[in-house]
View 1: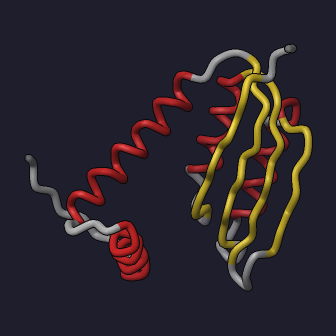
View 2: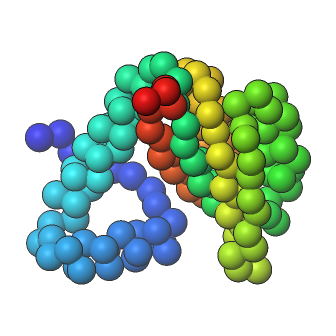
Length: 135
């Protein structure tokens, strides 16, 4: 095993510890290892997507973060050929949820997702897809 050190916001660590407690973990290290494995599996799944896909991209972001709404809109305009619809929901005073319905080439959808993930002010992104081919 390798030992690492990391810095986390207090709320994130408290939330993580609460999840570990609810799931019955006795070790924070084991929980972090499992979370990292899950992250890697999700990335590999996205990386291996190919062909036509249809899906939903859920984006939670802090609308107070300077420029995030404009950046999100700009990216959606760049990928307008792969976006069929979107919905905006005000979750809290701070956070908004953007639900983006996507259809088309898996590589383009993955690129769209990753560009949004990298935006400052975006707190969470989840892509769910299925085959977009004719049955």
